[in-house]
Length: 589
Image 1 (cartoon, rainbow, N blue to C red):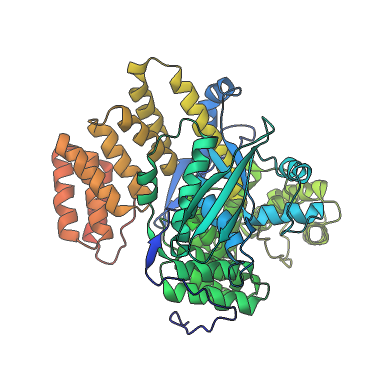
Image 2 (tube, rainbow, N blue to C red):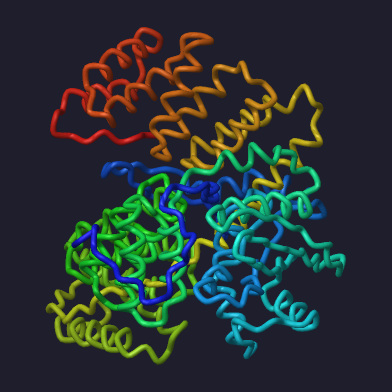
């Protein structure tokens, strides 16, 4: 795979396009998501570094834990949905048409906060297609209302841009669907080479309109953005807009050649290869996405599918497990089971059982469980699950054939039906388990945001002196169930109210470690130790040292932790990792 490929632009270049880095605000922070409970609490299996760790399924436990808070916050302001439309091109100059789609991309990243949920381009296009609306239509107010209703949007952001040869000017308006009010123009301008900076400033204006409590100074908002080359960004947007696969790949490879760490271009390049059934290239690109990227979970899900199609079932299972650690969707658990089943492993039964428990209405989960139970020798259980499958999908030919084959085998093996235990059925042809290709993290995130808002509302009703302790308690509960992103959010809020809390700093370090944010985890653990000796902080430092392949430093920090907690089980596990040179360090909960 070439990364520094040559690219000859097929469109007219922009004369003022700079080659130096330009400010680009950080991508929105990915939140772990939650699903509504099914019937009762249950245990789930989550993998950490390849070692099986039974944990409470944190999604359900968090919901059950916080149902009173959610109920109390029903009438409170919470997560609101935002749709950013492509901006109208008022320049009438060739070569600038791609900037229309650049606005939803940049503004979407900047506005994707804890209290705002951004509708993706794919969802926007799907809604437009269903309504028969051209994507590039200059919509009337009535059409905008229809679009907002279709997407259940609280705000629509629309605007235009112009360029007179020297100054690039962007205008945006916010349509508030609740108040049925269109805001005045928000205007930002600058040189064309600072396009992303102008868009970022416009995002700051919009945040002030949609979130009156937003208080971050304009300059700080602009400075928090990491650098990205504008020519790489242009190629990325042109890749987004390209119709043909070959053209899309050409633009995206050009973007990555300019900026090898451009995660969004890498992800789209991987998805494009995946859609073209080039699973080998897709797997290579998906594997390049860093763990700190918001799309890491989705990338690993698709990596798992790619490796599955390539017949690499062990790699497929590992990729699905990486997703399950962060976003334990039912289809992810199912797919772990499918990959393990193809490897001939009997623990596939566990994953299919979890999938059935979470979503008993899906016949595929019952079918997969039937296959796994049969392979494990539980024919009675397999028959029961096949009945469940056919009760939900009566015309399922594979399930019907499998059921009939089992019945015939049992009948031939045991002519006395009154004593089924005496049967020794012959082997039957076993169907392949069914993998799931859908991945719905967006609704998962929305519910997670609602949960965070419910927590904020609940804690906000407590006495001010009690709030830091409540935040810390909630953070520890999230951390105990593996919800690292939610724990991080609560630890940070606790520290905002009580910045000298060593326990909150070490807890934040632990959450960051679980998210593979190693440098920041080290900083927070060090800050905790500057306040007082803290075993948890030393454990975090030891694991960060292991991630940096510095076993001597890891041993020193482990010894410091043992001096404080000599009977720690985590210390024993960590000691084994340090003493095993072939093992790979992995964060543990």
